[in-house]
Image (cartoon, rainbow, N blue to C red; front, side, top):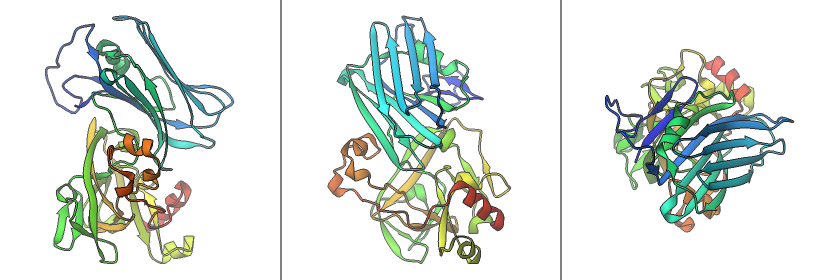
Amino acid sequence: MTWIGLRDADTQAFSLAGIAANATRHPRFSQTELLRRGSLQLEFCYTPSPRAQTLVDHRCDVPWPFHLRVMITPDAVLHFSLLCGDTRSYMTLDTGLNDCERAVELVYSWHAPDRVALLSMHLPYAAKSVHRALYEPAPLPLVALQSLAEAPLGRPNLSYLAISTDIEAVGPTPSLAGNAIVETPEGPEYVARIKPGDQVLCKDGTPKYVRWAGHRDVPARGRFRPIRLRAPYFGLRHDTVVAPTQHVAFDGPDVEYLFGEERVLVSASHAVGGVQAVTDRSQHVMRYHQLLLEDHALIRIGGGVGESLYVGGLAENEMALNASIWSGVSPAHFPKHRDFAAPVLKQYEAVTLTRAFA
């Protein structure tokens, strides 16, 4: 299973071999060949508007009529319409969006053999999601999906659109490159080699057990576009590649003076703009790893202080838990994180702080 399509302002790619592969030959397929299970994932920024906002409006007549339209009305209701041959699927989601959001993730996953589909919206920076099931979805023609991936983006508020042959997870996602170095009681270790039951060191030197360790392959765009945090900034001894949603901890007199807190968390995306953090635009797909502890914790990463995976109250919503990478896990055996280990700064606060530390 793999990502086979990617479309953004700079990329239009489609290959059944996978867009992460450096293949010189791409597998051929017939005009009537179908993708019976898969996912369509897109990310957009949202600003309230008195007019409807169209995110996707794509038509294709080969091998039969195909029309995908996604839009948000002024009352913040998302409308998803998909025509494939004689089958039309239509769903609405009451998003609850009432303010600007710099990243909103929308995922449509279908499994035609099981006769079920799921439309999900996720707010990664607010750790909230909305889901709605659909039954009797149509399998989608590969030629129509190729047309969708290779068409110009055309919408300024759409960050990217990607196509997968798998049922993609929705919700909290790993955010550390596999070579990120995590401190353990036995010494430094690559995060990719840490297993459930191992221990990691928190900022104060306290060891904590790892409940879950895993990874996920994602499109290297939007909230997944890799950011290289460069040593010696952020207290790092080693350059560390993270996702934009990964938080870095700051403490010291400047933090106490500016915010009245012992320490605060800053999203890696807010640190980009100087020499201390740069984005990597060379990849189509990125594999991220992370560690889930009983509580959200500040752990030693790359010589600095980062965070373990934050899942909030995911276990309290069974549909959201089953749509995540922990599908099938009992809510009774899943951690609940009531709050972050330290306050998370807003963008304007983070910019002020990172400039002070630059």
